[in-house]
Image 1 (cartoon, one colour):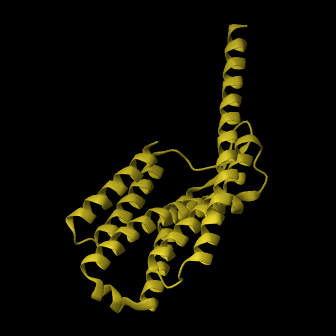
Image 2: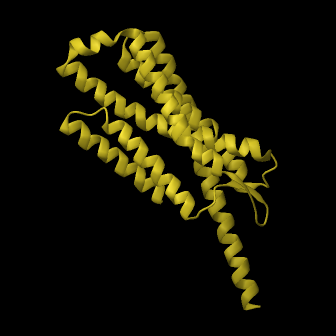
Image 3: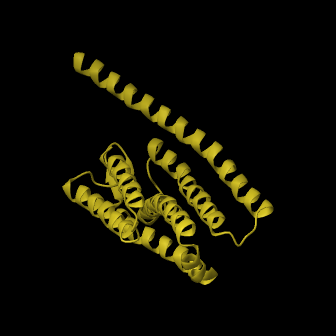
Length: 213
């Protein structure tokens, strides 16, 4: 009887956690999507389109919207048996991680761009519109490459029901560390200023902390 009471209490605790998590995710989705769409619309209507800083802000908003698109799938995964297939499971992780890396890289590039514009305006001007587009393309390509291990490791796990998850083991931790260190190396390779280097290291440290959680 004591075991049954303990099991019942544990089940209700898990259920409460699921309800709280689902509620928080729902709030993030309902507030985040309209807010980021409003940012995109406002920038497109009221500002010049040839400003690269605004392009980065649009890129950041697009990354947030892309991440928020996966929230309903995450809510479904928390509460129901995953019946959407292995492919959509992997795609959900790919989109989520790509958007997360894109956000971090966008903020970093924004800092680097402001530094170069202030101290070396003529050099940035030589980059031109085509060069700025190449930078954005490289940013998304790097984000996709860094997030690909997460998609590869994502799979269906069978417990009380099927869930879309990534195995929590040493191999996965190694992949996460590799992703973080590679991202930091790419960022630091662009940083010649001590201040920017310290900012980049701080971003990497914050991201590494989120991986540990």
